[in-house]
Length: 300
Image (cartoon, rainbow, N blue to C red; front, side, top):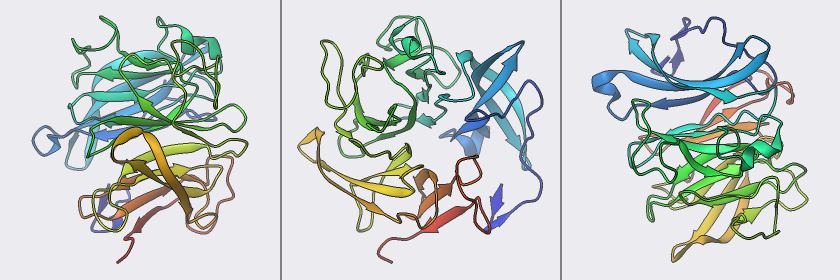
């Protein structure tokens, strides 16, 4: 909990076993209920061990007086590993909970609709399956993903986008359609296949390792899609065609190599942008004060 710019010394909650933090697993996603002021609910995505196997799950927390407890397990048994756990949580404009999952190092799972791995999932906020999901009685919203790390919705079109790590470069930005198959491990980059959707933008032979994303609603970057990059150590600034949500007009990079690995970017209620660094994840070079939450006010 941060109050008036100061990090409180006691954590909101400390997760006991079977919680585990290893490699790319751990406490990965956080979303705040739109009615938090009334119900004090938070949603988190975390990795856990069960016997010799690793899984991920989403739980609902209830906060009271700067402390939290697990209120309900919404979904569990999501395949996990030391890499490719996905882990982004966001509540969409439709007040549904969206969850990204990785292939957990088994690419074929992404093409298996009976598996929760390599998917974007969609749930009601109580953990039940929405009646209008694309596959009856299934939380799967889209499939064929390798390791999606970011999701966001355009405030102008209402369309959903995701970022995804490629195997060797070819990182992706995708326009998400309900029931869409995004091709992993069959296609990547500019490759095409029947019934599969190619990305609207990819990194080619460069590695971005795109993570969290946000659409900007005010200031000089209004309407732009910002994507935090891990290995790229930069903030990707994407201009989409206002008349065609599947067309990228241009993109540029900011803060390259200034803050190190960037895990997430969020626009705050006051219009500030908040960057989350990830230099202590075993792949970065931590500097003084890492890791940090950085507040930016572009153009101010």
